[in-house]
Amino acid sequence: MTRRLQVDVKQKSFNGRAIIHDVTFDVAAGEIVAVLGASGCGKSTLLRAIAGLDRDYIGSVSIHGAHDNTIGVVYQEPRLMPWLTVAQNITFGLLSNNKNTNIDGLLHEVMLESAREYLPKQLSGGMAQRVAIARALVREPDVLLMDEPFSSLDVLTRRSLHALTREVTAKHQTATVIVTHDVEEAVNLASRVLVLTKRDNHGATIQHDIRPSQSTTSRHEMIDAIIESLEQSQPQHAI
Image (cartoon, rainbow, N blue to C red; front, side, top):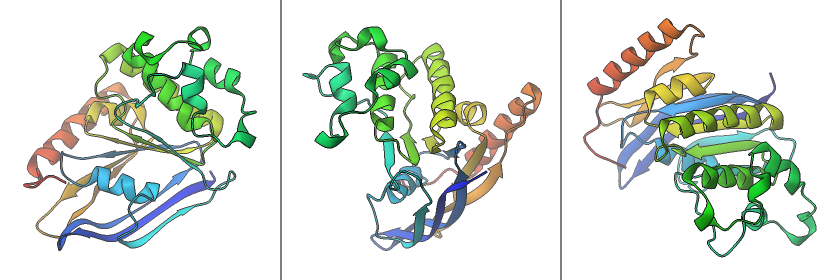
């Protein structure tokens, strides 16, 4: 598999306190990696570093891409412009010379062809998040970052969007990194799960690097083991 994203964050501190320590991993094209950890362990801090929103750390983040090293981001909330239609929200922010993007193809991918002219107030939570995913894909990103994007949705909608995430990751050959605190989601969605834990004053590091089994029984055992590990390493301070 083609390596698309390489993360090597040696040290990230805030006000003299270590947040992340020696977090190194690669993500291949078409692969989904879940970053899992208790609240406050530095997951979102790591995601900001990968996105280039925070460069104040020791280490490096490299993208080996085919599309100008573009990054797409899906947040916990869809953050749609309420006065724009679904189609307009997806293409919002594109440069004028990129407006020939295949919006029809994206709408088909996220199953929103019939909602093209809807305003955000007319959408369900799951539909709005599908718009956010299409908006993240519109610039053909090499890396897709997802920050707890399904946490506010019901179980059936989450499962539907898990399937969609797998489909678009495979089709667009993105390196997808999803941050979550939901152990079951991480194990069922990702092809690889990185469990961050924070120990002493050294910052969060990768305690487990897991490739989930296809066996349902093994998955349940893995979920229980990860939960136990997280309970034992619950951080005292949130970031």
